[in-house]
Length: 189
Image 1 (tube, rainbow, N blue to C red):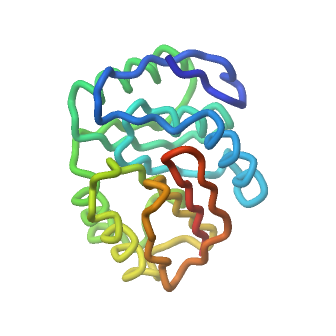
Image 2 (image 1 turned 180 degrees about the horizontal axis):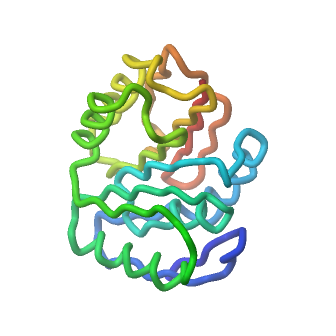
């Protein structure tokens, strides 16, 4: 079980779907991330797109800190069902705009870019399986459409600690942290 590390729902437990491919962001990296983000972001005004959502812990951490609009994208239906149950178990009787989408993350992001003048999210968290070699494709997609990003846009990528990420031309790397096998990279406009 995981616990939410901060905000209104601190210490609330969530279940994870037992899968060899599921690798939730560690509490150490989550605490580091939210300490960084609190200096750049108003959580109550944020709108999060959580790609490869897995356990949903990142979206729940945002919600615990006041983010009202969260979209979880996860293509594994069993993992998505556990994620949805987690959110419903923790977030009770509150007004959140929460979507749970069983979709391929890469195709979903492309469709959002094609269908909107501006992306409806100012924060995108990408945490693909470490063996996914197309991580650079997410950066390329974002890089090709700077006019569709809000002025306060933040891209967060969790990757294998040895992965060399392409730094988007239209974003700057503001913080990066390695821990164990993982690395979190925070890019901003």
